[in-house]
Length: 63
Image (cartoon, rainbow, N blue to C red; front, side, top):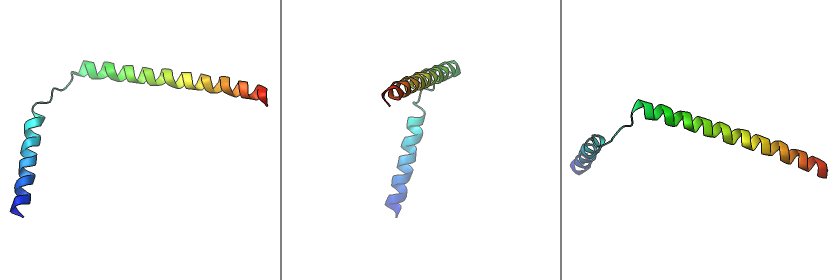
């Protein structure tokens, strides 16, 4: 049991040490990249919607 407790303590000491090495991005970078992702998702959504309309029209001609 002591070995388990020691290994858990060692693990969390390692986590604490690694946590200090993290370089967090600036708020401006997070905001700009979030906006970029939202715009890309919107563009792809519109593209897929337009392709759906086009294919629906083409398949309608076949029917």
